[in-house]
Image (tube, rainbow, N blue to C red; front, side):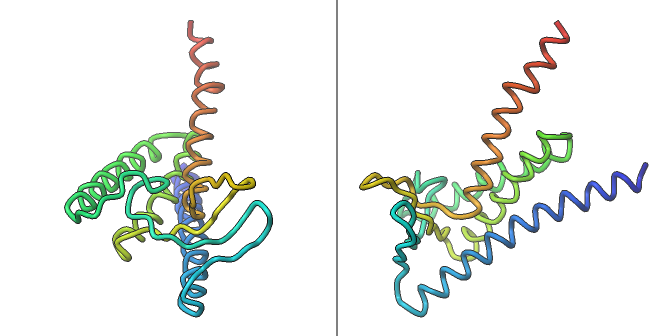
Amino acid sequence: MFKVNFIKVLLNIAIILIIFFVDRISKIYILKIAELQNTVDVYLTSYLNLYLIWNEGIAFGLLSFNESYIYNIITLIIISISIIIMVIMFNSEGFKKYSLIFVFGGSISNLFDRIYYSAVPDFIDFHINNFHWFVFNVADIFITLGIICLILDEIFINNKKNETIV
């Protein structure tokens, strides 16, 4: 029994580390391009560009402030939320656990950037014609997928459990 739990824990940690390192590698690659060319503005398709911006706020640049104390407060809040997610993740099972692993893996990668760079490099610019979505990064993709999966889990899986109880 202990062996199975140990293997599951290792698998969970491995997934978190893969998310972290895939995000780190993508950001290091973009930052290297920026270093060599002094800018990142790469046209990939008619819907997708690589364009480097530094996000000092939270998701999608919200709550960006110039004052460092507000930045530090937001960072402390993000750390607190990440710890809460980690606790819930270790107490969850199945689909919900893996959804939380996605959120946690992405959040610690962005948190690393907040602490190391004092901002998060965002570079994926998805757009349709002249309508540009927020610029984001690989960690944001995992966070968003994890949250979507948590919503689906709540709607379909937990809702079925509640119906069988009643």
